[in-house]
Picture 1 (cartoon, rainbow, N blue to C red):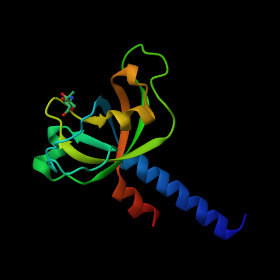
Picture 2: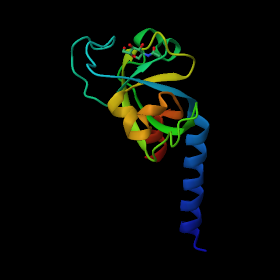
Picture 3: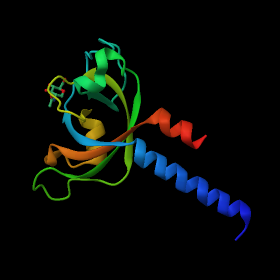
Length: 137
Ligand SMILES: *[C@@H]1O[C@H](CO)[C@@H](O)[C@H](O)[C@H]1NC(C)=O
């Protein structure tokens, strides 16, 4: 096997290892429109791929504007087929006071891309988008 190919494989392994280490597992719920106003941006529209952060993650607003990649890992109840494949990127625009530790409140538009709305609450993993970009570039 060529040296360049080996290096590429090593690099790929390191990237996936790093994203596994840096990503966090938690749960997600969702909220319906209208999405305004938000705790971070008031009535300024930030689109529909948005989320509310639990109080710890929100950290007094420091998390506002950060982007997270989110994947569905499984259900938290008996609803069949809780997850859809793929991942989404959402921007944190809000505080979710009722969210538990590592819980994220996704917009309904975001949640429905990765999960079955009927499932209500699903297990997720999430990673700050900038981390991933930093690792890849
Ligand atoms: C999710 O956000 C909506 C809108 O801000 C809120 O009404 C709802 O209570 C939140 N969910 C939880 C679990 O706190």
